Length: 252
Image (cartoon, rainbow, N blue to C red):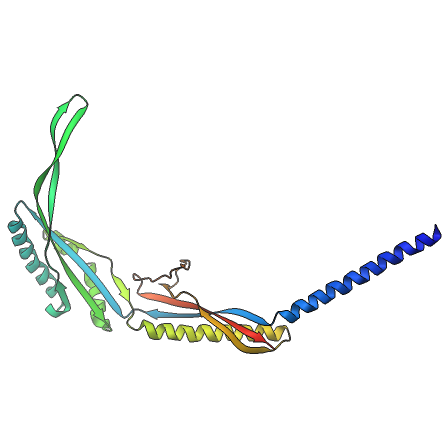
């Protein structure tokens, strides 16, 4: 009995030692086969839009198309005079073609108890025309467009059914902006990889692979999440562009 009591703890001790050796070897082999490192870098840039587009439309309604056309032409002259009175040259805005839409109204032709019979009856035409303003790398004209947007109620008060759209802002040199972000993202990824390897007391080898993420443009300070297909904000004058770059390096 004393012999077996001595053998049992000895076997347990040997088992613990063997297990430790096996696990240690596995851990060592795992590090050896891990011969590369992947990191993601971020390139960002805040910028101000240098292009602006704003449109508005006005409409007139009449029983006959020719009458609606005459009314819209008269309104066009009033709209033109209004914007010129606000300091715009005739060359700084343009008018689109006149479009027509048939209008119908619903009438009840027969009613028997709870059953009602209705039909659509032609009720004239609506003529619509658009006026557009745009500017590229012209801050003076851009400010003038921004200012007049809030003054169009004067047209409505004069009897013109004017409706303005939301201002759109874009940037004229997106290729250069994107190239700048790629350079920043690549540098950021390289620095991240170097810090990780330095901390682990390793050595960074040659670049193995590089890939680029989705190009995103959002309003400056926006908390909008990145979209798989990319975001491209056109309503904020001040924006933030960003892109991610993934680099994979060999380890020496």
